Amino acid sequence: METQELINQIKKLKKEKNAIILAHYYADPIIQDQADYIGDSLGLAREAGNTSADIIVFCGVHFMAETAAIISPQKKVLIPAQRCGCSLAESITGKDIQNWKANNPDGIVVSYVNTTAEVKAETDYCCTSSNALKIINHLGKDKKIFFTPDKNLGAYIVKKTGIQMELWNGDCCVHEPITTEMVLDMSAKYPEADVLIHPESNCSGDDQILNLDNAYFYSTAGIMEHAKKSDKKQFIIATELGTLHQLTKENPSKEFILIHPKTICGSMKRVKLQGLYEALEKEQFEVIVPKEIAEKAIHSITKMLEIS
Ligand code: 13P
Ligand code: SF4
Image 1: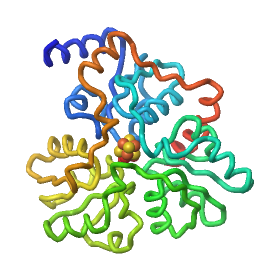
Image 2: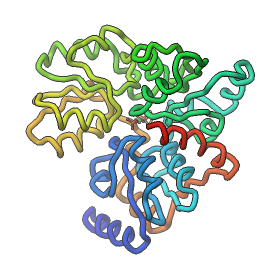
Image 3: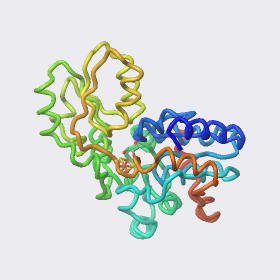
């Protein structure tokens, strides 16, 4: 089928089946253009909980679709491509958390939403990059906190809140290569630009970058908001390539420069137009979280949504 015909069929099937398409900002531009809602992890989780659609087609990675399935167990959640993994989510298992808890019976486990349902089921509080500071500040200094799985987001939270935490040693293969040197080099090259950095980046816990006047740390939705509100005309984007699509669409007179041409999440890019069409037509690939895991995992997600 030609591109336009695929787009027409997607629209038609969506209506017929009362389906909604959710897409992360890192999805391919053509996929974002078919979405009813584009968001960061927190926004997508909220939308999955609020929609009245019968089918949620989730154009993102597997852990995000799993989160939607946990929040909305009565809905059919589909992911239009297989093998949409995440290096962060794959760095830790439920057993790793159980082991930590066995040695720290009074400790609290906070896991980034980039984790499997099995890990969320062992977790006390979930968080995303947009509410992590809020959640850790809510827990305060008196408790022993184990923060998983992203060491860079963890280091950033420790610096910003002054609250010590034990950190799991996981990282995102897309953001880990964004180093202090890279940010400093690009800032020197574009002195008028603001640098908008996702806290999964390797430089996130580094004082040199935290103290830069023109550097700001945000989730992907936070980056969108800053770019919109700012009077600046030029921005260095230290996150995934897909964000440039909405940034340029929403701010046609501003310039966005990706910090490095290789900051691309291969898993997010697996969803293509043909796959999206087939997902709606064949109702594939359904994301099923076993009931006993979903019933445990929902608590850590609900606590997060209540605080944020
Ligand atoms: P956001 O919370 O900004 O959506 O981040 C999700 C993610 O996977 C970033 O790598
Ligand atoms: Fe996972 Fe990194 Fe891709 Fe986000 S960008 S989904 S953290 S691999």
